[in-house]
Length: 102
Image 1 (cartoon, rainbow, N blue to C red):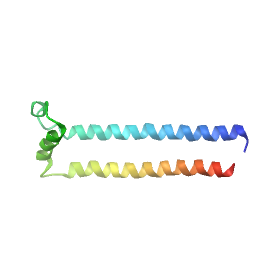
Image 2 (image 1 turned 180 degrees about the horizontal axis):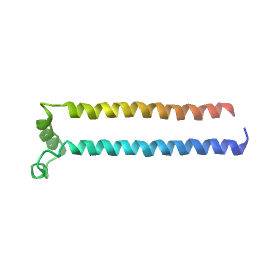
Image 3 (image 1 turned 135 degrees about the vertical axis):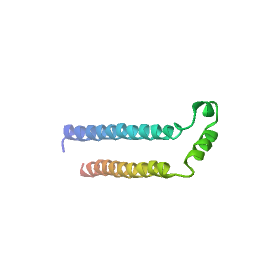
Image 4 (image 1 turned 30 degrees about the vertical axis):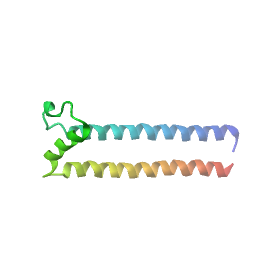
């Protein structure tokens, strides 16, 4: 493999890493919005100034009888994390394969 080809392969690996990071940020942002949405049913004045643990306690009062919303959020992130694990594993393996080919 020529030096130019090595540079291009390395650039592509860096590009893929950036793509995965961007996608990961999108999923984390979505999960943050979902988390904040769990507090939407609680009047804002009941949450203002409360420490996070107490805010979570107030949300727990709302979801204790129906925790499916929280379970769905966890399940979604579980799936997303597994998919990202596979993608980063593939990127890692591709980079190592290229190193071994040199």
